[in-house]
Length: 170
Ligand code: S3P
Image (tube, rainbow, N blue to C red; front, side, top):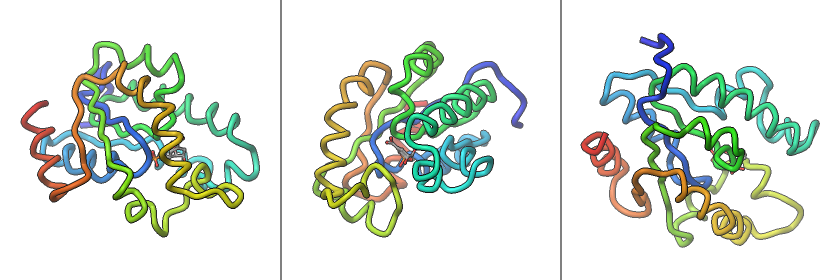
């Protein structure tokens, strides 16, 4: 059910393109729990993320994201957070006591993962999207690690392998 349970069963965090949404959805299905993705919740209420960045700017997006994260965390189930969400101290505080899975992915496979997708932070000016991805990943990794209970890398092998390992761990 999607009854408020006070605390999420499991939260997925990690850099853009690590597979938080795809893997989270499958983990939820395997465990018979509801799945929420903070980006999709934002899109439902406010429209496409690139348009939010364009119209309102990143600080406004972060404020919307923070409200969404707070609500979604209160609803329980399996939750995939947007890549930047754990950078908010309140979000990190809200995650205390909850199992947090950090998904990582190697730089050499990220180009294929993000191809054809629109992420405002990776499509700025004429910067190289992979270089930007790596810069942001490196900047955030210590924070990701500080709140995560376990780390799974999604760079190789079938996605289902990671799903199975998470389900076994949960
Ligand atoms: C962002 C990640 C995106 C989305 C937005 C900003 C970030 O989510 O929230 O484009 O700051 O890393 P994904 O991690 O699901 O791509």
